[in-house]
Length: 125
Image 1 (cartoon, one colour):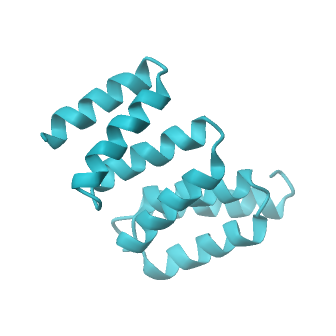
Image 2 (cartoon, rainbow, N blue to C red):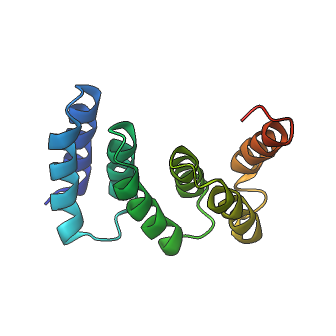
């Protein structure tokens, strides 16, 4: 299986609004390449936009275990937990990420988290 072609096909399916077919395509790829991070991010994203938050959480938790300092996975997990009204767990994800992140490489994610934290403190979220 060609990973790039499969990811491109899944991306096209997502862009066409066909999340279910995209998920099937990504799951097939992940059977052969279970740690393929791009496929996992995309799979979690399809679950998230389909409001399948429990499934999205499982995928994003897996990504966090694979790479604890990955900003995209952390933000995705935070957003999923927040949508599920699991606020304390979402805030704990911020704390966990800050401890593991490469401060320079993940500066953008850290700044996003600083904005989110400020908005929470002001009661805006």
